[in-house]
Image (cartoon, rainbow, N blue to C red):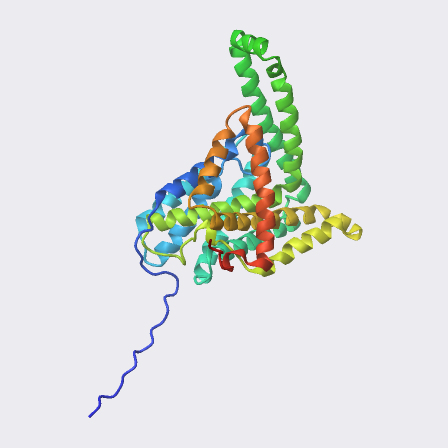
Length: 363
């Protein structure tokens, strides 16, 4: 007699996480952490980016990951340790600009809380989708608070203006203090290279121009910094804990997103160029910049797909190293700008061309 066939009883899918081996490969993550923490300390980036101490974004986001992991059966001590670190970061001594410090601290806590919530309710979604929803929720909350609370949009703009001016003043104070401390060496250097004598005045002029741009586009830059912080915190968490919160973060060469996001770019272009939408042109510029930047990241993924493994990382490392040198930093900045323009074109074109799914020609 034939034995009756039996079917396995279906089991419920895990609600949030499942145990998995610790992810390997600290090299690229440590390189990314170094860039994330050090690049914003360059004077030109300090004059542009909303958050120059990116540890303020990273630590609360990682604490949120550990709390969700603890809820899902992970290690309690890991969550407690990072919660304590997040509290230390949040309660640290304020800067001279108290208004901006409060805004900065409030944003990092709202962002971390929204991300933790998304990790709980959107367990099957990829990280980029969770991060975008987190940004939307955080921005909506910030908008509601600005409409109902005592801090209006004009207060925020004033706080950002004063903070960027404070940073530039610190930079110029350090530069002028170095010159005053070593007058003999400075005079000898100016005698050999007279153009260097104009460095303080040119630096101050450059920083003011960069800061004026940063004031206009700080929402989009803050959103991009927040996305990067969530990605870095996600990667760090999955190397510290065996309890997964979702699919692992893929390689840059595999980065893509829903093609419907192109409408964000289109809306930004429409707001910027249509005369009847002039009152909200600032919003359009920020939408245009934000979606242009994420499409540029997608384009970098396309470049990494066609380049030799590791070539793009080596190029970026050399470029970042050049940013620290007085003469080479201008060349590096132009190089990054050129690569960014090319990457944006490739990323936007990937919406229709789907470069990475095309068969490669062999010779």
